[in-house]
Image 1 (spheres, rainbow, N blue to C red):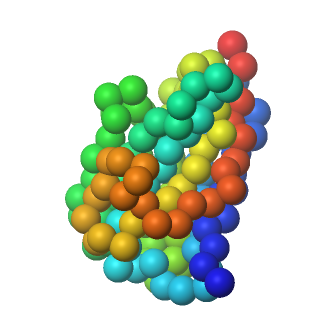
Image 2: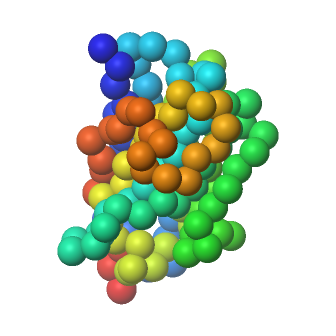
Length: 124
């Protein structure tokens, strides 16, 4: 059974950094595009970043561009989200997702598998 499991969330002060990991199991996702999304309380889930299957093409939402970096290690079946200069408004549950298309995807409906999420809380 395919699974995506996020880890690395937690509580951090504003200006700090966290690195989220998303470990895939049950199948290889090396040919899948991967993405990160987040959902804050009372808000809709929003797109953050996507990476193509080879890892050489990425795309970011304006809200995180220059602060967050998505990367992947296909040998480990893992995708990462390095988050720097965190702000209180970054507080949310963060989700990773996998899309059968190898090319980066921005829309939630284009993703086929989702993790359960990891909580990130940024204190002011």
